[in-house]
Amino acid sequence: MSSYTLAAGLVQTIVTTSPPSDDYRIGYDIVINFISAEGLPKMDIIGYGDPYFEAKIDDKVRFISSIQSNTSTPNWDDGEWIVRNIPRTAKLVIRLYDKDDEKVTDDYFGQFEITDLIDYQSPPNGHTIIGPLGLCHGQFRLSIQSSKTSDCIYPTWKVQLRQIQTFFHSQFYQSWNRHHKPAQTIFNDSLRSIAIQTTIKMAHRALYRRTLKNNQSGRLKTVDDLWKLFVDELTKQIKPCIYTYIIDDNTWRFSETGAGFFIDFASKHALLANASEHVCYAGEFHPRPKFGWENLTDEWALVFDNGSGTYAPNSNLLSNLKELFIFNFPGLNVLVYDHKDPHLKKSIEQLKLAQERYKNSFTTINQLLPPLQSFK
Image (tube, rainbow, N blue to C red):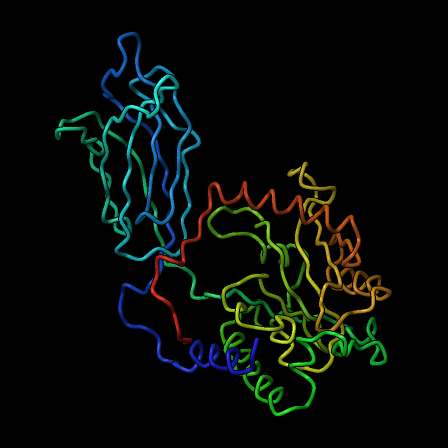
C-alpha cells in the first residue's frame, strides 16, 4: 500500500471534525421478537400448512424463522433478532410461506411491512398479512425495542495496568521488526515513513478521544470489571471476537481486530502504539470458555498470543505476559500461545464457529448508513 493511499484514506476519514446533523446518520440498535401468527389460510387439501417467514431490513440483512409443522397458529419461541446500527428510515418487510418439499417453490401466504421501527407501536390485533389479490391472510404479532447505537463507532479500550516494568524491563522492550515490510514502511526514517507516522498519530488521537472510561482513574478494579468490557450490551453475552492489543509503559490498549477504521492501515499495532518504535508486548487475544467452546457454561479465559508482524514479540516473554495479567486481575484465567502454536489455531477455529452462531441472532448492518467521515 502506498503512502499516498494510506495518507489520503486517513485524511478523508478524520479531517472533518463536525458531527453530522442529519438524523438519517444516527444509528439505532433494535431487538425484534417474532411472537406468533394466527388465521393463516389452508394451503393443502389435507391438514394445515407448515408456515415459516423471512424478515428483511432494507433488503440488506435477513432473518429466516424455523418451520412450524401443520398449523394455522404458529408460535416462534426462537424468533429473536438483534440488529445494530440501522437508520431511522429503515423498513422491515416480513413474508410468510408454506413449506412444501414436493414443490419447486413454497406457497406464499402474504406479507406486511413496518416503516416505523424506531418508534414502533404494536397494533392491538397484530399486523394484517396481505396475501395475493390484497386479501387478508391472517395476523402476525411481534415486538420491537430500539435504542441509539453507542457513539463508539470503532470500539477501542485503554486500560491502566500496574507494575508493567516489573514484568517487562526496559531491556525486554520489543522494537519494530526490521524484517517486516509494512514495519519498514513506517519506521525506516524516510520522508515517506515520516508522513505515514504523522498520519498514524492523527488517527491514534482520533481513536482515543473516543475511548470509554473505566472508573474515575481509568483503572479496572476487579476481574469482574474486566469481563464487563467483553459483554455485549444487547445480548448480555460475552462476544466471540478477536482483539488486537499492545502494552506500553503504562497501559494495555486494544481494539476489535478487523474494525472498519483499521482497514486502511499497514499496521494495526502501530496505530494502537501511536507509531512508537517499541512496545512492551503486542499481539492478539480472544475470550473463550476455559476448556473450549464446547462448554459455554464453563469458566472463561483470555487467550493471548504474540501475533504482531510489526513488533514480532519474543515468545519467551509470553510467561511474563501471563504473570502481568494475573497480578493485575487476580483470579483471571489466562492462556498464552506462540502465534504458530497449533493449539492457538484450533482455538481460533472454534471461535470462528462461535461467531457464526452469534451472528444468527446478532447482525451489524453499518452498510445501511452513509459513510461516516467525521469524529466528534
